Amino acid sequence: MRNEEVARLLREMGDLLELRGESSFKVVAYRRAARTVESMKEDLEAIAGRGELEAIPGVGKAIAGKISEFLETGRIEARDRLLQETPPGLAELLQISGLGPKTVSMLHQKLGVSTVAELEVAAREHRVRRLPRMGPTSEKNILRGIERWKKRSSRIPLGVALPLAQEILGHLRKVEGIGDLNVAGSLRRGRETVGDIDILATSPAPEAAIRAFVSIPVVEEVLMKGPTKASVIVEETIQVDLRIVDPRSFGTVIQYFTGSKEHNVKLRHVALSKGYSLSEYSLTRLADGEELFFDREEDLYHHLGMDWIPPEIREDEGEVEAALEGRLPRLVEPSDIKGDLHVHSDWSDGRHSIEEMVRAAQGLGYEYMAMCDHSHGLGIANGLAEDRLREKMELIRGLNEAAEGFAILVGTEVEIRADGKLDYPDEILSECDVVVASVHSGYHQREREMTNRIISAMESEHVDVIGHPTGRKIGEREAYEVDLERVLEAAARTGTAMEINAHPSRLDLNDRWSRRARELGVKLAINTDAHSTCGLSAMEYGIKTARRGWLERKDVLNALGLADLMKYLERG
Image (tube, rainbow, N blue to C red; front, side):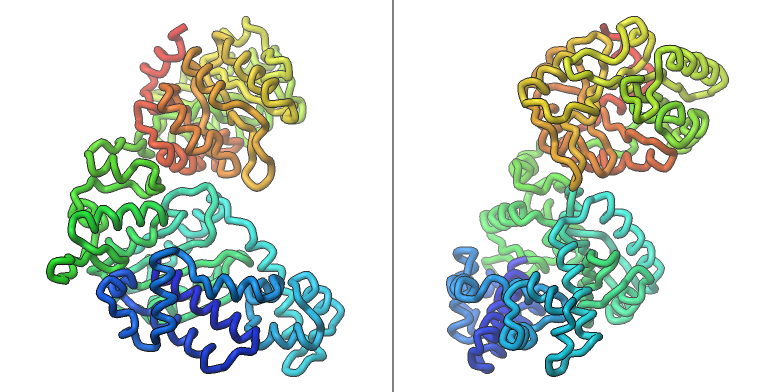
């Protein structure tokens, strides 16, 4: 996205120059160049390679030099200098929706405002409304913009972004003429958090598609609306961008905007090595300048002599080399999952009965499900005392006699106590089909203590899976201190599976450690930890994390059919 990066930096330089009171001609020149660069279809690197940057309308010698500097070094020294010379708070104020350089400059001069915090105080004290061209409405909008700015400082969890994107895609699919349609960016790659939501589409009537997009009920504010691109705010703070692109370039464009940046840089090097220049719109043969267009990104990768690379692993972590050598893994798919090995019912802290959870799992086409309610040590979750667990076992055995083509596995999520001992004795654990051992308390133990605690649990012949192994909750709670390398080595030695907890607030193990587990030969269980029937749908988040960890079907415990799973669980 070099064109967009350059356009953003040029626009930022124009704003900073205006803040400093520089010549309006210079300010306008930077903004005009930014608009031109942003709307260009050809990649700036290709133009620079031909020495034709100054031929771009609105780009003179000085700005061309700065563009060239960025393409070569990744920075513009003049822009960095402007930032250093501008009070940090003033540059930050420009990020508040609705505040341009003129307004920021006036607020600074008239009210002495230099930071967002100072502006908020001035607005709440009703000093802003007394300024020229301001008023109560402007003041209210400024406060609203500040609140959004505060919230946007944090990234959006995947569990929030994905359902929202799916809702928007659902609306767009109903728009007449919409053809290709998909999310891009870090959301398509399945990152656990994303900055915003990028959507790409094709349409013979782009302006009509844009009008339909900005009219979707969830849209709260339209930031920008052009003939082929629009940006809106939904859910108070989340920015969603839609681009309508040329159908013949859709494959190249979605590859480019899916990223990651590092992956795209590596792909450009591959293209250059084969005599091409790759931009977001086309592949240009350097020998004769002929442009090649791809409506499918698979065809682009194949043309470069590579296997198509799944979006989740486009992070420049060896995937390009593997694709060139034909050794990419066949990543786990939703259809590979045969069951869920960690769900809860209303016997402990779940919302639905075992029978209701079973019907929901059967509706997903599963062969089995393990009912793993909490052990008695977790009183806050209504954990089961031994007699209640035995009562539940009897119920499950009766339900299994009536079930056809589906197995309800007797399970437990047993607490790993602070000393590493388990919440149930071996006698009752031996009667369970699946034992998931987890930590829910004592998070502040030192790394060595926590590591030994978990390894001690894995030494039990009855423990099959370690649940949410780091205890983290994204955006809420950091992982406890634990030496995961030692834990995974112990898991490989004891044959204990590690969980990828698919709940979007956990995604634990994460992608990096899941890949390391795979390298050590440790099995992974992708479980939802569902506490309700709708919680079973979280499996898609776990699968995305597993794919980002390069996991194949053979690496996933619950990709085994029932017979093979039971053999594995009974291996001791």
